[in-house]
Length: 323
Image 1: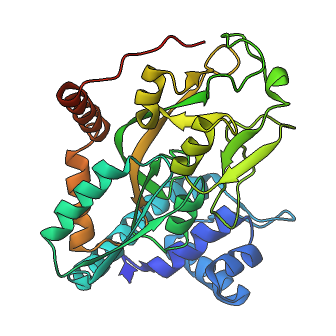
Image 2: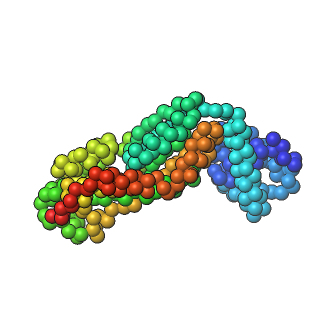
Image 3: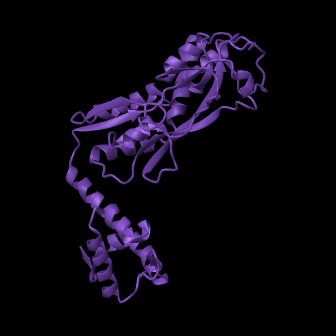
């Protein structure tokens, strides 16, 4: 495409040289030959009548004029990329299937009810539903093996956009009597190091260098999801962190005790619908995204209201004091 004498290709080559720090690295980034990139940038400079790069040193650097031009060129390239995505989206038509992945923090009854209602209205699009834990949903999204994820939000990755669906509190808990010492708010990691901690297995094949609430050096047992983790903890086989929405009844009736305190404060995670912002999305994917946006911040409140209704109908068990 030609824009007032220069082309998007020439702008892409110049942008790559600035970002990569040289012609050879830019050629590799664009999967083009070194002479092709060099020629495109040279032609751009001649058409503009401006020296965009300083070639006097060991490595090429943008001149002051080049930096100024690059800021505007980057905006134009971003707009062109968005326009191309939009054109591909228009050409896609109605999707025959959508790949949705739910993560380990997902409140399944509410999310599955929403998905069931949505796909009942779109019977020509098949739902392929997957489960992943820890970093698995992000990996599936970034590998283009999912159109949408419902998981904790990763706001650091500029490739992703997300809709806040509510906060999920993770609480450190154990069965009564599991700890060989009194439960207080001053329990330290050193005291917990002899006790088995139950943790989720990360389903990602490329695991990030990050541990989630793990006491280093403690014996561990690993499970695939929070439902199995809850059973092990209630059964007195280990301790660990669980979403509060899964254990409210057990905390009330004394089958679980909270270990939250100064050293184990628990954590609030943002549950979110997440998708790639740099990929085209068809009309059904857009409709599902819009449906989730309308439920922003209310999904977990709906679960809490349902739980209160059930307790009112069936009666709650009397709570026992925690030991």
